[in-house]
Amino acid sequence: MASLSVLNPVGFPPKVTRKALAPRLETLEGKTVYLVDCRFDDSDIFLGQMQAWLNQHLPGVRTILKRISSVYLHDDPTTWEEIKSRGHAAILGVGH
Amino acid sequence: MVRSVAEVNGTPGLRQVFVPQPIMGKTPAELRAYVDGRDPISGRPVMEGVVRGLTQPFDAGEAGPAEFDRATPRLVEPDSEENLHRLFLANRWTDMLPIVLPTEARVAEMLAHTRRRPDEIVGRMRSTHFREYWAYSVEKVAVNAVMAGARPEYFPVILALAASGVTARSSSSSAMAAMAVVNGPVRHELEMNAGTGAMGPYNHANATIGRAYGLLSQNGQGGSVPGLSYMGNQGNSYAYNSLTFAENEERSPWEPFHVQHGLKAEESAVSVFSGVRATSFTLGLRERYWREHVRNLLRGIDPNGPPTLLLDPIAARQFVDRGGFAKKDALLDWLHDNARMPAGEYWDYQLVQNYIYPRATFGEEPWATWLKAAPEALIPMFRREDIHVVVVGGETNGYWRIMGCNYQKTISVDAWR
Image 1 (cartoon, rainbow over the protein chains, first blue to last red):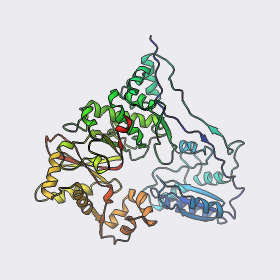
Image 2: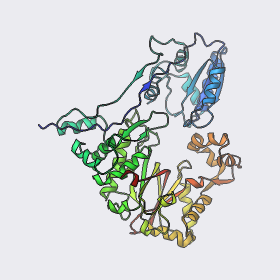
Image 3: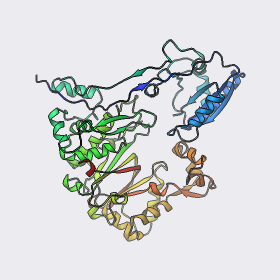
Image 4: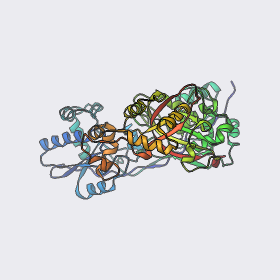
């Protein structure tokens, strides 16, 4: 059977550099945990329930429910900076 | 999908916990049950996963920096025609319809129809805002054009579409397609159809230019794979040729679409729309209630997908005769003024909540002003600049339709000859 040579249609990917993740906390006790609402499909209602669970079961954890500054299509460096400076951990809630 | 996005953003070790679908529309009590319940992927209690995710140390090497490259060779491993067709299907490089295999000879023939170098980067695409951009060269566009069955003389139009950087393969769960409108002399050079059957499937150039745009999008951006990089819940048959057609400039009562957007009538151009999902239609404009009928059509589309009217020339002339819209701008003004709904109803739309409400709360106009309106006050459904009109059709009747979609940009075809 004749062998054909054809070109690959796939584009050129960017190199992905893995980002170092923040070290995990030894305990959540006494720490501030942000719950970040990406403002999509009622994620605020969901995170409100998660916040209630944390307040009920881990009362030593300070929780802050934070809505991003616009839609998820835009980066939100102000919010990320606030979490870095005032918080110890963050949970990002993506509703769908 | 979630894991793939984390990986391509450089955070493959990101801790993730899942709850059942959907979040949208559930009561707080139902969502509390999600929180109290188990992760459907791991089987563990959701909150146990959350706490472990925040406190469990990483394994060695899991959190440190590393780099990975997914570049593929220029040529596919030689094989029989039958096996190559199987390979292209298995790799999801097609739209599941038969393709023309991109041999070096066929690609060279395509490349001969532009003065641009094969290795010139035409643009970059990604399937959504939170994924990474991939780049593609003139040669990569030619490969996909061959696969689509396009004739080499169509290549400058396909390059212009590629240069838009607007993907025709969005990963949105709303199952978007793209739409492409061709204007200027190139319509006649390529024997494109602006008349009867223009929107498909009755013209080779319309069909294959749009198909090439779709294939280039999915391959140029690194894939469009259900569950991984495509989440369109119902799919969209408009995506087969990205709804590509020529405007019927000769029978339109108004200036061509590309002239409205800054090009000269004698220039050739293609205009790209994204987010094509909703269609509503009617026949003509009745003397007594045409205004109400048009308002009804406009009310039938989602406020987050603004209207582009696709008017057969008969319907276009009826808008001129009945409404006195001698200029297209006058019609656009009227559409903006008449597409209204109560503010309370508008702000309660899920997509308005997702995409527009956040911008309104941060003062972006005109939405910030609309947000102040009383719930029963009638507010515009769309921004004036998001409403468009294109004339297409063969005057076999005065049917016309509205596409809910987003105009993105108009690209010169001549620049890619």
